[in-house]
Image (tube, rainbow, N blue to C red; front, side, top):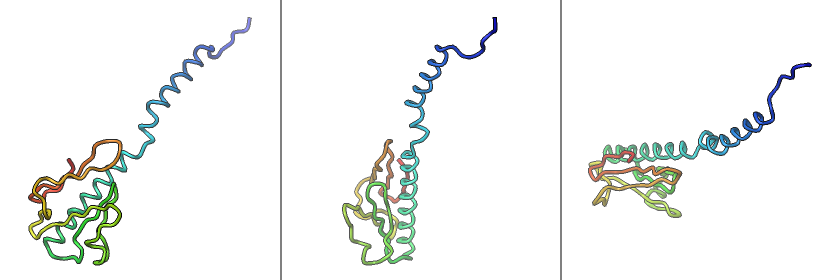
Length: 130
């Protein structure tokens, strides 16, 4: 009698079921970039806020205001756009000591995404992820 080598039907079904469970639970975590995008947006916002803060303290730029909306942030290139908020943008500017203007308490800027990522600006001017 010849001996047949190979996998049984039960072993094949079990492997297919295990691969299906892994595909449903683990694969989205590895292939989702939204968490990375959110951290990148946070780091960009912190960098732009610090840049505007330093430019204000050194009085070295024409526009020292950061515009941000959702996960997008920018410092306008023209003076005409500097103090004008467009389409739901929020503006943050600093005084000559590097403190945020009109801030009575900590300014918290939430970023949209799958986890709770925020940028905080303390009343004395310290900018950090919180």
